[in-house]
Image 1 (cartoon, rainbow, N blue to C red):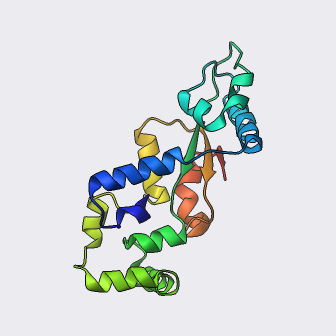
Image 2 (tube, rainbow, N blue to C red):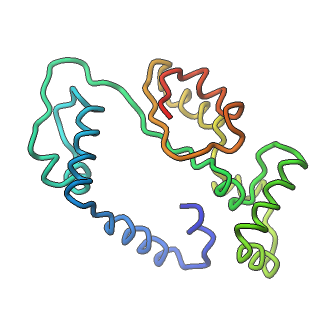
Length: 184
């Protein structure tokens, strides 16, 4: 994630860290069963399972096979990572002007004192450079443009993960307008 990206580690160590975190994902049987049921309901007409399904959901995924001749239900699971903590931690500018900058700085002072301490000792990076190098989470507006550009149709079901989107419903308006089948 973005938080790990600020750690001054060599690329190979960072890659190993991410791989270890991924392989550490092992759910209890009850959680695997619940997850398997959710995946089956979302993919109700899909006939095949992936290796990832089997790795994360285990035996409960193998019990039932997917059946049906109907068209698979198209959906997208999306985590915008645009909660206040991520927005503040990213140090990026999201177009909210001076009011937003002050609000996010106050949040950083309350929640990320070590980040601020580290920033005082390092060379400042411009918000343009952060965005150019991919260290800024996409705004809901930008995510909407990306989804449309990738060809996702208006009728696509989008299951939104995460908690409170920074900026609330007004920030989400482009996404909810273009994709009305959004489930938060």
